Image (cartoon, rainbow, N blue to C red; front, side, top):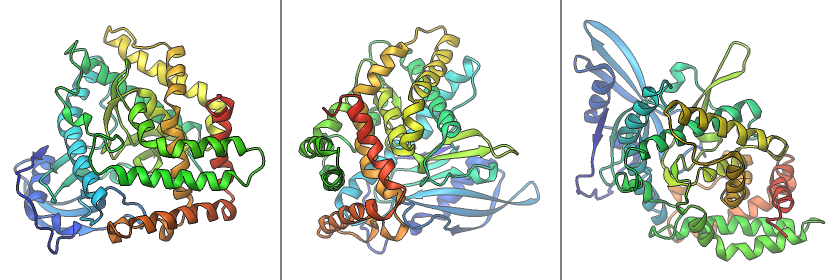
Length: 430
């Protein structure tokens, strides 16, 4: 593994494109980390494999590498994540935070978390191997193993994940969270953010300059929700509640993501597009991989669970299985803690209370993301072609498309309204 820190040098940004950030130097570094110092680079090329609409905080591509090792010619493919080189100011801020957090998570935190899990008899975290990462400003890049070679693939998100897929994810989140508790236990009285200060940098809090534009996106999507709800009988109270929430959204995220008595290292962005699965011969999911750890944070575990369950599941899967998901999560977490001889940090009852307390993180993300998940790629905003002056118009267009989609896409109404049904049942909306 190779980590290239920020050198302090600033790129001019002139004629810089994401793909131009891939250099022979960093390809060689990744190859050496992967295959050893005896591997000799023969040739390499950048090959795109993602679809329009897949890339948000970064550009994802791949590098196909030909090399020789001990007289044998071979090939390997690496997935690369690249600075998107966007003009929009808030996206520049997000890029800076995202790459620092992800590179340091993979190359600094993961080895320590895996060592602790391995010591008590558990397998390493199910995340891709990171072979090279640079956080040099305006030239950020990460090389990861290509999990497609091991049979992992993404599930189409439009239908939402089923119980089998979701169960694997809550179990892996529990392992990540529990491993962070074991790491925390090594420095009692001093939380992990002192040693790993990148955990404190969070796009969703008011403490980060430039994040106002991303909060504006959420606010516009909730405005679309209000417009939809006002025209549906039985949702008048929900519409009034959602409208009252709009000016408070930055404060809500700030409060919900603040550290609590149950602090753990969270994934931060666990949803369908950031997860891969491997299947058995019968087509059943047997293993999960968590990707895109660009928003990792130190916060309540309930924020990860809420974010995942409301962004990636439909109501008819989430609601009847919520208790089972939380119970599975708690059992997995407890198993790791027991193996290490440590006390569990919360009971199942306390976890359920914490989930309800942090439900707005997931609910707001679900409101905003459900329409985007169901949109066609050409209708999803392309931040790479947006500047600061065009941003408001882009958000207004997205709001209009969201309202229109509610009436034209048969999958959206139930997925969207189920969020409000559950909030009303839980007396969050009253």
